[in-house]
Amino acid sequence: MSKRTFEEASKAMEMSSRAESNMTLANLPQNMIHLGDSQFLVVRSFLGNTRVHIRKFIENDEKELIPTKNGVSLAIGRSDGETPQGFEQEVL
Image 1 (cartoon, rainbow, N blue to C red):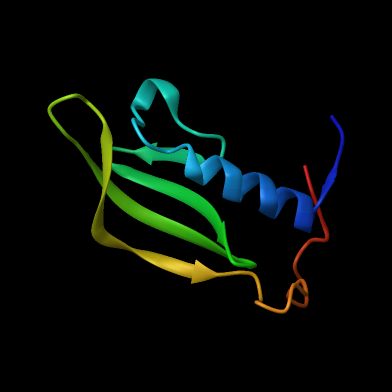
Image 2 (tube, rainbow, N blue to C red):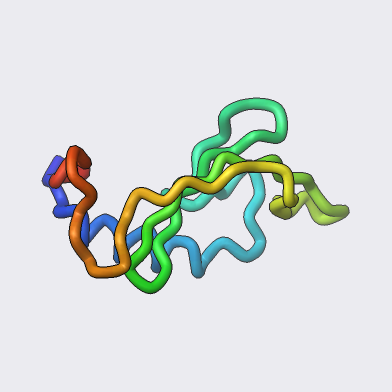
């Protein structure tokens, strides 16, 4: 498995988060991990800022996953494109 830089992984996550419409448990995007019950961990990048969300999702009538307001969002990137001190430079 090749290693990607933080910037490459961030761009890939941004592209992946755009494709999150019609999400179901059967087709979760690469940047989303099911933690159990209705809890999910989602990594998103927007305008150079990478955030980790731990959020509750609900299913609509079509079984699509819809995010709720219940959750937390943690910033791990900076808008100047620099990697935060102590953050791993390479992402698998």
